[in-house]
Every structure is written in structure tokens, then in C-alpha cells.
Length: 191
View 1 (cartoon, one colour):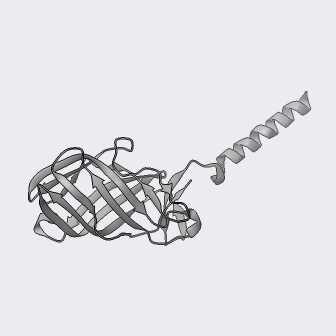
View 2 (cartoon, rainbow, N blue to C red):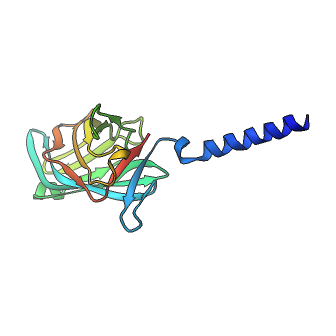
View 3 (tube, helix red, strand yellow):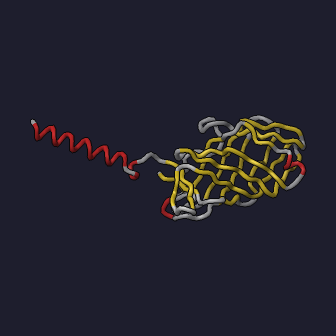
């Protein structure tokens, strides 16, 4: 009986150690810290690049949009967004933050992945207020977003993000990136 209890205790301790090891950790997002040369489940990065929208049939191109992504315990969310490049862009206000970021769906044979940003399944839905023309568009989420270099086997590399968003309400159409939005730090997903 003592041998059985000892064997059972050893099995429990071994199982606990395996379950706590990184190989068995839950899937999560990570950001690269170049100062320490390590990946972390906590941190902040930005994606910056050109975007456009059509609001009430008026084009609103922005030469520089910056989306701030915050990671907390491996969960990613868009925690801020700013727009620049024209008077109309300066009046855009991101609302209903934070917008959730889904786990990615890796594209076969690639280090790129598709993901969803800002649907009810992942925190808040996207809501954006425009000043010129005056309109608020909400209930939207990205219908197609692709981020490069999210595969953990590719090593630290800058990412590019491209997206197209669809809004459930409001006069917004053609909301998308018009070129790649480049990350300030490497960003990856650990399945």
C-alpha cells in the first residue's frame, strides 16, 4: 500500500509539472521585448499605416492611422486608435474601446494568419465617430484581417497588418487599410 501511495504521489507531481510547463500552457499572444531579447504575454505595440473609409459617400483617406495593441496575460486587444493626414482624419475618434483580437487562423504554408478584431465574441465591437462628414459607425468588426509573421517558429520579425471592416450600422463603407500597417515590435501567437 505504501508503494502504491508513493507511486500515486509521484504520478501526481509529474502530471502537475507537465501541466505547468510552457509546452502545455494555454494558447496566447506575445510581444517581443528587444531590450531583454524575450517574448512576453504582457506589453504594448502599435500598428501604423494608411487607411481609408467612405462616410456618407465622402472618401476619408488617412495617410497615417495608428492602432495600439495591449497584451495582458496573452490576451490581445486594440486599446487605442489615432488618425492623421487630413482635417477629416484629425476628427476621427475611436470609441467603445477596447476592441478584442481573436486567436488567429494560420494560413497553410505561411507565417501569416487571418483574425477578427472587434466582434462581440472578443470584447467590444468597433465604433468610430467621424467629424467630416459627421457620422458614427458602430457594430462592426473586421471581416478580413491578415497579420504576417505570427508563427512562433519564424523568430522575432516585424509584422504587417491589413484589414477590411464592415459596419452593422451607420453610413460607413470601404473601411480598410490601403497599405500594410507596420508593427512597432514583433508580435506572435503561441498555439
